[in-house]
Image (cartoon, rainbow, N blue to C red; front, side):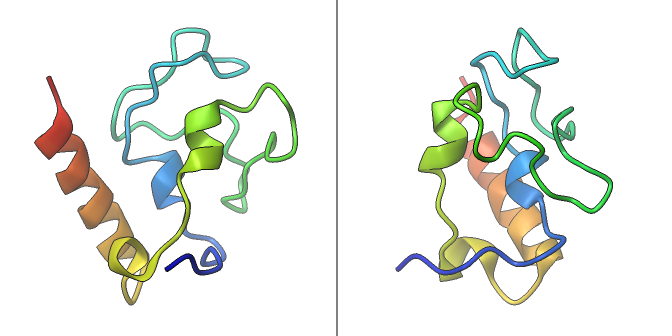
Length: 86
């Protein structure tokens, strides 16, 4: 069930790899690397921009992924990245 994003989390902007172009990262980003569009206060600088990758908009916060805190979300998404890596 979708929930609201946790402020200052940004796990979804760090843990997963993104293979589609991101403004400032034309080849996407590797897993574990913060997106270049992640601001100092851990928000997406291009959240409403059409150039934002579709995969970013498709990833919705949910209780299992986000868990009780940011560290859980980072660990969960990192494990998912490893489990789905080619």
